[in-house]
Image (cartoon, rainbow, N blue to C red):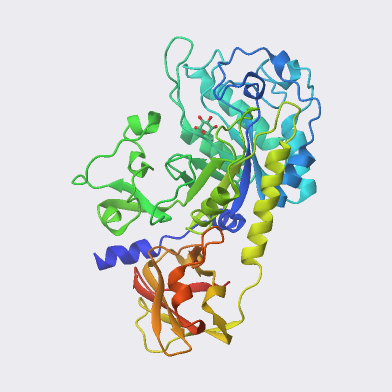
Length: 459
Ligand code: FUL
């Protein structure tokens, strides 16, 4: 078992996965005929004439994205209704037959480059418009569209697929040739990470509500042994018995007991995605979620070894709604306020501890008031693998008393331990304590192999 855990500790990310992790948060843009019909899933027979964003301004989208500190955009180039936001050669169901007459993929990718953020796209395999859907020719059609998107719009950081697989014209479902799609992406955009329910680079967290697992491991099983319960996921891959072991609603994915019954392991971190509003597309009567909800989701995504993918739906004019713009600005301001000024402190590794159970002291230049201690942010050097299984943070108060302040499981790319919630009343436990803290100690209580910490920062 020990040797197996050691093996798990050495499963390493690719450079493109590390680059993706560094981004931490990026935006989804859901825009299609649904924006004009008030639907979430179009039927595929909406007339192109309804798609008419009269004030389209992708620079405005980019400004909104950047105001919340997000580092990229993922545009729904084609949603389930099959309508293409670029003038694809392979279908008539696109912007080219709409009053818009603009290549929105081009406008958006160029705006991203002007604004200094990365660009990627969502291309729905489920296509309710294409007459090829449900036949083997559909995979050719899909690859032709992928090729257009991968070759005409500069560098692509992300290709985002979902596994929705609905009815074809004859009631038949499509068998998606995902391996062929992946090979094409590897060939044409080798630096792009690919999202799918099951990976290969980034996997779904299992819900669309922005909720991470208690322990979000980046190293997950690629195949389970026979004595573990067979797990089945949705979609054709799972039906073929292929990749279903990464079924992403499993709460224990990646934990010690889960990987113990695995035949192989891969580095496939989770993305936490949700929309700023209840729907993915813009609906006049919907309001953005509260600042508190966005901030809490940030803590349980970026702060829990995942990335945060937040959807912003443009309205019928082709602009991000002013209500959402204000919420994003507030969100960006709050993040800057909470995380821009670390407390001056010296971090030292305590000599003589085992490599899998190190201790670090964080000694403040000046003792700080307990009520000023808001977050301890931890990071492992995940380029070498993810290792920490459990940790605890204790505080030495100036009076000599010692208290445990936080404890947790995974660290990975980043773990934000919250001490004081800006939205709650101040933590009475901390307020009642002797107020001045001289030093904190981080105890790693269990790890899969030698612990390599990259950052220990206090705010
Ligand atoms: C899902 C889709 O069915 C939703 O409409 C949305 O695009 C979401 C991000 O992915 O699978």
